[in-house]
Image (cartoon, rainbow, N blue to C red; front, side):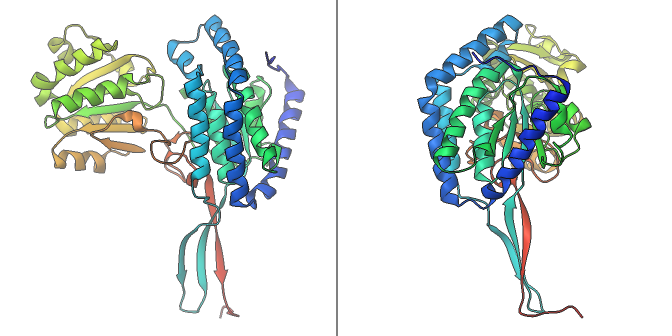
Length: 428
């Protein structure tokens, strides 16, 4: 069992400063590493993860026991839990990232000026990335692999509840790096549970940290956004909505809504609020709610929903703003697409929303008027995942509007520079 370090004060600051210096030192060789070297490292990481399955499961068993003793919620326990299938999934995700085209050096755009200068906009690594996350130990593999592919060193600060699991996963990643001859410090895991370590990252580690990605609950993201002195890719809570229009196919609506809520309730793409067109209440509402209830979902509805479905509990304003991460859904009848847009505009975290409809005019209004990172038509909100987008994985779902939005994959972990080619031009 790994004993969590509980350093305090200046010792934690010293530990974090050294981690920052090592990451910055790894940045140069990683930024110019050959694409094949990164691909080889990722392939070696995937192999190492599979070999390390017994050690990872043993470490995870310790974390699960500690989580149960600490009274973690079922949703948090599900996020924390690793199984042989989930470890294989991690390895497959790393292989998928390895198979992606290397983005570094891509010419995004190019053009010529009348004076003969040729301009190119070219992808470059962002720099040193800090990822602060809670519970999910698989983020260790996803974030490490994605940052490596984009040529960025990464500093990983996982939650104290997953420290043993994350450390076992991290050891496999380092094994892959060294096998390919890349700097072991390209992927570092913060070894202390001291919360002061987060504070040091938010201050930028003496200028050695270039961007922070927070992945966790509202309080964590709020703290990062409030205190960070470096740019932040905000991954806000997944307060996801699904709207069923009067034109929706009923069988499809039932299937999609149940999947959106119940496939995995503890992920950020799980639907938390169901909006049903009032004009479809007589035909669609009860069959959908019956299917949810049969799947084990608790239903909380507004007054109109409870009148049509007495088994529903009462939904208050707090429900419309709650990311349950559990088998609970809030349900409201709305006046068509305008009512759905109004509700989402007021309550959404701008993460992911879905519309179930056959009327193309409804779909176009939904897509055009709702400003969330991911919008889906006739598909489950559970597709809000970088792997499902073909990105190989993701560090998180960015809900802000600057630089990256939606799944933060390899391309979103790059910046760019301009290359200008001339033949002796001078400016008059």
